[in-house]
Image (tube, rainbow, N blue to C red; front, side, top):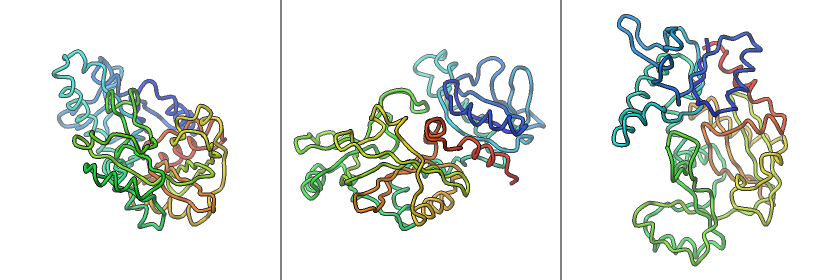
Length: 314
């Protein structure tokens, strides 16, 4: 029995579920936006422990072999509690879900590995330990330090320290996001008094790479850089169709696999820059990064690889 934890708008989950069905696996899809609604939830029962309750059927968590913790979103029922209680109700519902997930022996990914990988400062240090090059970086709330860093580097970008959702539900993929953005000299720095910011020297690029590691397998795709395009490839209108399957240098591939393995990540999406001199610079790892477009447009069989990992004996 395989559990897929996601939400109702997640189309990428369908690719993995189809791959599991092709392998004759039993699959339960748990959409977190429906958690707590009639016939769709989690519970802890005396003498049984954590269970899923789906359409009148009780499924003990200890009978589930693996779980893919794909995406979360706020349960719709939490809004019925009123604005002042929405956060509390959401936490209570997810606490019961956590009890279910932690009962399952194989998790993609384990919660603690996800938490650490979601911090760009921690992951950058881990990448350097694996021999990967990273950009010159400053994180500060001191405007004087930021101005000095900007003076030392001819081209600077800024990005979120975490994953950049500025407005909206932090458990969802909707809302407004802070993308990697240039930092012109005239940019005011008053906001540093309220919130720390991450500044990086902008790396000259010939291509962006999205590399997906799943267990011991690696899938890499390359996007030729647009000299006049945005600093963040996600803002390119052609990005989802323009990535092509490509092969990384063996040393870079080995370092990314080691980064995931040593960080406890079964699944991870890594972003790198290829410099004009052929070198590679590591930018970040997203432990729940999107990948469906790479399967659909670049032909990378990522869904099958995730299915294989979920069915692999512990």
